[in-house]
Length: 529
Image (cartoon, rainbow, N blue to C red):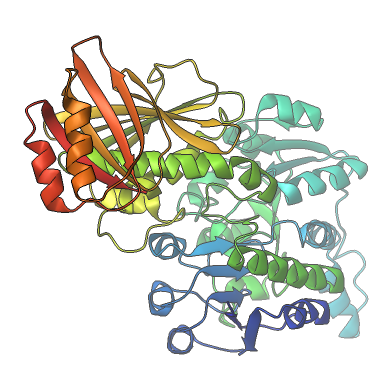
């Protein structure tokens, strides 16, 4: 298959060479597209590569009738409607490591330029002035730096600032005390960071929760004379509040590589204040970073389109290729388990509970749950369902999904169990793998069974009495339908029996009706895999 790829910005020659070398990729480079123009252009493309200028809005994503993956050549994905992409089943990926060093170094450049008044002093000198006393600066040594967000960039900034003799404290709600201790950093709550820091640098992602996190209320808690650096995302700071604090002197200085609106309006006060250093979003703009970010995103998009790897996908439950390879048999089994539950349910499923147990899969309940939902939803006419949008599709159908424990009723290793509920009923089914890659259904509502979930299978609940197997064999044989395997689990001799009857060809509905009319049968269903 040939994949069509639309690129909206320049790529490094090395990245273009990768596209040229792949015989399955047909690409176009079209720059300067507005969202409206991109929506007109995107139909027919399987992949889209953007930087920060192009915006993949909900309208763009909706227009991408064959769109499978959007690659962001950079870290932030705020120019991509992530929710719309996830709902449509479009993978979104970024390149978080490609520009890490460049951004950390630019943060240091901003920090030092602000402390020593470099830009305004240069401008003064070029205007023919010599104002040494006016632009006296401050040192970093002995000061306290507060880092908000200790990801890849924040960690590198911390190491560099410690080398300048700074005390470094950090706030990150996702960082454990043990991990902070390993990095020789002091982890504090946000209020303590605000009160102690002489300098604050932002390295958080822009989310609805973090947008405007540096506002009047937060600035008021900061130490008087604090200096703020932001090379992450402009939306993290309430710019009007920052201007007020800079004018009052509560904030002594700011160094910004990003602004809420880019390019900014020329009358933005931050562009004209002597105690503010502003650069035009240059953090990732080094030759090395731009080359690497292009190479990485092209490799990632190509691998995603080929289904090989989904690394750095921000809306996929499994992104690491090695993990995906190890989990793939379990994910396939989970899909079949979900499909079986839907096909056997006597009404629309309203609740799904998933449990996993085993050395191989204990840490991967999230992707296994997503795979199970994909299998559960595919037999239902809901449109295309994949690993990206399965949780959303389940939510829109009113299905309550939870992860639980205690569903396992068997002693097999690496068990996946699922209990579903519908109006008036529920069922629990457990599955495992034999020989690492052979899926098996091993338990249904406490009845031991050994079933390979493939092909066409008749599932019957009946009384365990003589004559049943012979009668079913006769009915199927008369229509030329061969029984491949017959697996039975029973609660006891002469009691309830559950049969999985695998057949070599389809069973017409009238035969199903005749089987259901047999005196032994309580219920019979046909399932397909």
